[in-house]
Image (cartoon, rainbow, N blue to C red; front, side):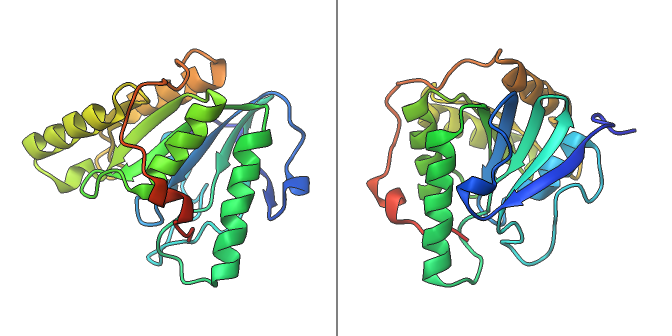
Length: 216
């Protein structure tokens, strides 16, 4: 049974004027194109095919809005890093995301999806910078935890928390084994309800290079 039985697709946006009305609360999901973002969303919502998945990275090419319950939304942001698209489209996506983070009053939090085998990349840090600037809380999902042995996965989590230095909460997650599923659902609920702490001003490894990273 779905954890969100009334969840439904609302709309896709290629331009800011296509965003749905800016009221209620919404949590955005972001991550590198091959980090398992869509699989994580489907697992957390417990709805197969709710978010698009595929062998080819970069399937999410618009900002997709879903209603989980009245006044509560999940937002699937375009993946970044691998999609084979033009430079002009990558720049459009980067501008669209900047507009989203800078103008969306209903944004209550970000679930940042990172492959724990790769660690935080430049554009992940850009996402953290954007959230810090607007005081948006962030919860990090270190996905594909089933791909590493328990000790190695635990070490990756410790390393991520050390790098974040309080800028976000973090956990291990696997859409395959469902490891960390309940904590992830609790984090989503807390963000939607405004119970998660705001992004910290703690010093973490920001990267100026991230500002020029292409989306895909």
